[in-house]
Image (cartoon, rainbow, N blue to C red):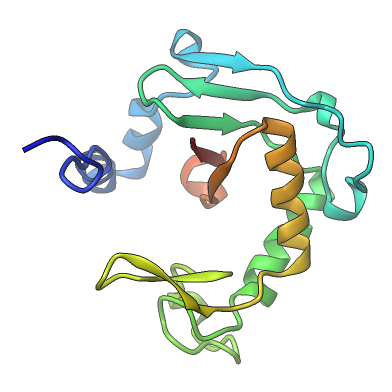
Length: 182
């Protein structure tokens, strides 16, 4: 049998390892750009995005962003915080108050936001069928305009084709990262 993305799961064992650790041990065992600089390579960014209003999306000037690849995990990239302080608050508010109010969430229908404490994920755009492991063309919600604009800017800056953004709570890891699938 040949190794494919369906037969080789490199993520789950590492995820389970870190999930079992106490919070303090997660920080001591995790790699970071500052603690392990030799494991990361910095990439240049495409800064020709003058046609975008970065301020309206809470973004810093692109010249202040940094993109790193990981030598230990091909295809995984870290985009250092591109958000202003106000932008961070703005996006957190959108995620908690606006994007969580829909029926494609880990708790089902959450239009009234009454399940916020139990909420673990929300799907925007195409919805994933976990049983059949596919995205269905006829099962989608409209992607919010500001998310489309944000993704468009980030994709243009990092010059990639596809991206999965993972946002982690500040108290868990104190950074967010973007995995680029090329």
